[in-house]
Amino acid sequence: MNSALPFARVGVVGCGLMGSGIAQVCATAGYATRVVELEAAPLERGQQMIRKSLERLRAKNQLSAEQTAAALSRLQPSLKLEELADCALVIEAIVENPAQKRALFQRLDAIVPGGALLASNTSSISITELATATRRPERFLGLHFFNPVPVMKLVEVVRTLATEEAAMQQGLAFAASLGKIAVRTSDRPGFIVNRLLVPYLLDAVRALEEGAGSIEDIDAGMKLGCGHPMGPLTLLDFVGLDTTYFIANIMFDEFRERRFAPPTLLKRMVLAGWHGRKTGRGFYDYSDPEHPRPGRGFTAASGGQT
Ligand code: CAA
Ligand code: NAD
Image (cartoon, rainbow, N blue to C red; front, side):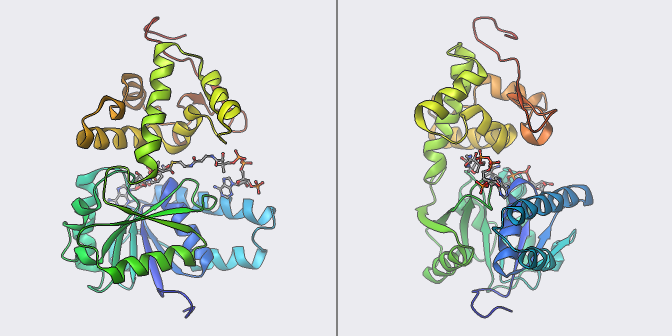
């Protein structure tokens, strides 16, 4: 154990877009890191994402070959939640579904030692709603990372009415040990960033539906006009249209304001299985990942392909 770190061993449940990145940064920072998935296929996909990401960092000399090898050696993939029994912190990064997350936390509560911290990487679900699925709400918090986790510096540390100060301090120390910059926030829908970002992303879809511009012109507008590294429709494909749709429904359910309601086009794309980069098709077609091609947009006027 690296005595400078607040925990000896951490666990991550879910090895998708976010869980793989969280596991990667934990292992890179020196933590023995267990990462658990339901099935072998997504677990292998997630490990492939980690290997690719570490290789990018090594190729840019941001990590040495030794650091890359050490990070990989600390990663312990697993299909058994029970193997998290020796973790002092477990971070959940599974699908944005309150029932599934609560069911998982009920199981984790029985597996992980009582003094350990439990945390969720949820984008929008109430941390209190998740904490009350356990018998340790005082040892429960939100640790909201940003995509891609190896690159984005921010972690939102979310406190509920029940979270004890010691847990908050441990969460803040953990974020710092990863080289992240933490902001503190309360348990409100979307916390800080998604409270502001989600309406913007949804409005980009509405702008497309309304015929304000083409897919690529809406993206170019925000990149060239506002200096965004990605246009909103590219970012939606990057985050995942399915995840964004789940987030929008959860935030709309709390705020009951149209700006949080998922646009019809977004729902239809999710129903069609167009989840963005991760399924090869969203607003863009990723058949050639290096050269995404804008798909055919929908405009309210035409009611169909444009
Ligand atoms: N692992 C390691 N390195 C990565 C990486 C990964 N997964 N993805 C990108 N990088 C590195 C690249 O190697 C490159 O490094 P250098 O600049 O040192 O060469 C750098 O990041 C830039 O990558 P690219 O050149 O491929 O492309 P880019 O310049 O467009 O940057 C990006 C990619 C960092 C993702 C950038 O486009 C960006 O910041 N996009 C916005 C991302 C964003 O807004 N994230 C938040 C989403 S919302 C969220 O996460 C919350 C939620 O709940 C939904
Ligand atoms: P994803 O679909 O890429 O990955 C979810 C993973 O969870 C999948 O690999 C799936 O197999 C696994 N999973 C589902 N149920 C499980 C269970 N019961 N046990 C173990 N594994 C299970 O999704 P994602 O984008 O990584 O999002 C995960 C969480 O992170 C969500 O709560 C999301 O809101 C949040 N988040 C997402 C982003 C983003 O940009 N995608 C950013 C910040 C936070």
